[in-house]
Length: 74
Image 1 (spheres, one colour):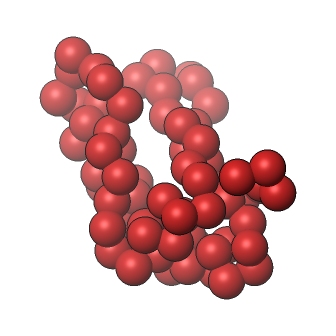
Image 2: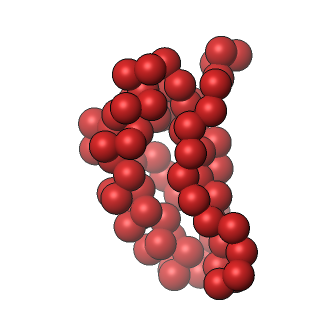
Image 3: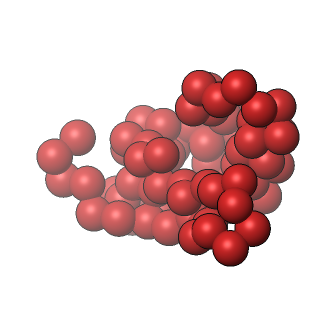
């Protein structure tokens, strides 16, 4: 899930964007827990003018993480 500059800034301020559509409550719960845990990082990315993104997988062996990326296009 890629966040825009405004969404990254909002996350840094504690406003969490809506999660991706998912029929599993576990995925939504994981999204909110991950978002709360990364507020400080979102604030740092927003201060640098970058955007942020989440990679979430319900598969235990799947890739998961949070990272910043250059988003000059939005």
